[in-house]
Image (cartoon, rainbow, N blue to C red; front, side, top):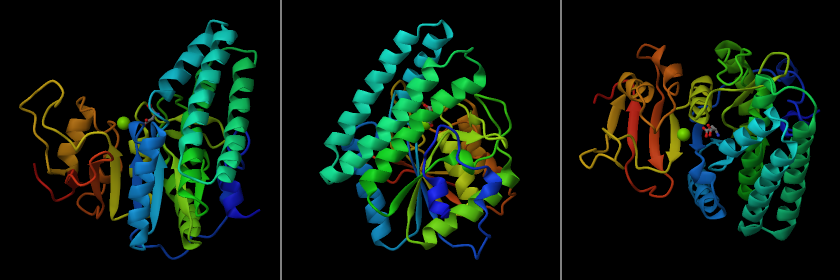
Length: 334
Ligand code: ASP
Ligand code: MG
C-alpha cells in the first residue's frame, strides 16, 4: 500500500499500526514550516478561504509546508455534549447534535471556492465520517474515557478533510493518530516523543518530497495498540510544536484570532500590550499560567533543547496576517 493511502482517514480507527508506516528515514528536508490553524481560523468557509490564501502564498515561494488544523470553532464543545448525552442514555439527543454538526460542515463545504465535483467528493468523505460518528453514538456500552476521545477525534478529522479539499489535489489529510503515539491517559495523553519523532520522520518528509501538503489533525493521537487519544483541550498547538520539533523545523506558525501574545487579556485589560519577542521559557510561563493564546504544553518540546532549538515559534492572526505577531525563540528576551 502506498504510504499516502495509509494516511487517508478511512475507517473508524487509525488504519494500520504506527509500526506499519514502514518507510525508511531518508535525508532530512530542511526548512519544513509547520502552520497550525486554530478553531476560528477554520470556523467558516470565509475563514478557510483565508487559510488557503496564507498557505498558497507561502507555497508560491517554493517552501515546503505542513498544515495542522483544529476542529471548526465550537465543534469540540458540541462533541463533548454528544458524549454527555450518550452518558445519560439520551442517544436521540446525541444524534440530533451530530446531525446539526453535519449540517454545519456541509454548508461550509458548499460555500467553499472550489469545483462542484470536489465538493461532491468532500461531501462523500464527510458523510462517511458522520456515519461512523453516529454508529459510535449508537453503540451500547458505557461512556468510558477512551470512547470519549474517539468521539472527540471527529472534530479534527472532519476539518482536516475540509481544509485539504480546499487546498486542492496536492493536499493530503493525515490522521495524526498514526504518527503521534501516546500513553493511555485519555483526555490528556502524553506523547512518546521518541516513537513519535521516528513516525513523523518516516512519514512526513516522504509526502513532502512527492510535492504534497500534509494537512494533519491537531489534538489527537493513539496508544501503541491503536486506541484514539486526545492531548488535552487546545492541544492542536501542542501537535504543531511536536511536529516542528520532530522535523527540526525552522518555523512553526500558530495562526489564531488575535495578533499575538499579550501582557494581559486585551479584552479585559486596556493596558495589555502585544509582546513582539519572547523566549521559550517566558512564553512557557505565560502558557502555563492561564494565558489563553497557547495551550500549556506548546513550548515543552523546545525547552529540553537547552539553547539548541533552532525553531522559531510565531503566533500570528489569520484575520490580520500583516500584523507582526509574537516571535518566540531561545534567544529572545521579554
Ligand atoms: N479542538 C480541540 C479543542 O477545542 C483542540 C484545539 O482546538 O486545539 O480543545
Ligand atoms: Mg487554541
